[in-house]
Length: 313
Image (cartoon, rainbow, N blue to C red; front, side, top):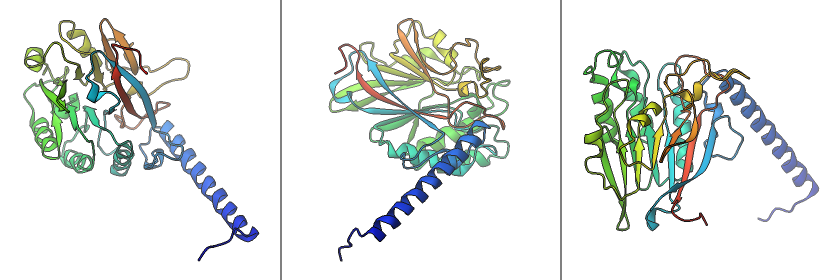
C-alpha cells in the first residue's frame, strides 16, 4: 500500500527526525564529555560512521615512491594502543572494531599495546575475542608494544609469557604478527613489503633479522611501537614508519601541551613527520593507560595509498 505524504504524515516524520537529532546530539555530547575526561565509552564511537563522534577518523593521502599500480588507491587503516584493561571497556573496543570494519580497509596495521598490565591473564583473552571480528581484504598485520611483553619484560628481558600468548593467539585469528621479520604482500603480480620490529623498551629490536629479506627497490612500510625507533633506521629502507605508544600525550593541558611523554624526542607526539628520507606517523591510539585521557581524542587513521613518484591525480 502506498502511503500519501499527507500533512499528518509529514508532521509525524518531522517529529521523528527532530527526536533522532536530539538523541544524536545527546549521544555526541555524552561521548565528547566522557571522552575529554578520559572515559573510553562506546558513546564516543558511532559504529556506522554517520553521526558525530568523539573518536577521530583521520583521513590522509599517503605518497609512496614507486608504489605498484595495483596498490594505488588501496585503503590502509592504522590503529594502535588498544590497552584492553579494566579502564578500557570491551564494549568500547568492540564498537571501535565495528567502526573500522565500516571503512572497508584493504590493509589494517596495529602498532602494539593490545593490553595493559594483564596480571591475571583476563584481558589478553578478551582482546583476541574482540579482534577476531576485524576485517580486511589483503591482510591485517601487527607489531607488539612494551605492554604486550608482560609486566616484567622491560626490566627482565625474556619474561615473555604474555608476549607468546598474544603472538600465537593473534596469528590464530588472522592477524599476522611481525616481530623482527617481514612480509611480502602480493597483489595482482605486484608486491610491497611490511616490516615489523620488536619493542624498544623490551630490548627486542633486531634490525638485521627484520630487514634480511626486504628487496631494496620495493615500497616498504615499517611497524614499530615506539616512535624513537626511527632513530635506529638510518641505514634501512623504509618509506614510512608507523608507530603508536605516545597516546598523543594522553593529557593535553591547554596552552601547555602534554606534560609527560614516554619518548626521548618530544617532537613525535602525534601525526606525520619527515625524518630525513622517511615519513613517520604517530597514531594517538584507541585506549589509554590508567584512568585519565584529557583533551586528546582517540584515533583511527585511514591512509589512501598513491604513488609518490608522480603528482597525485
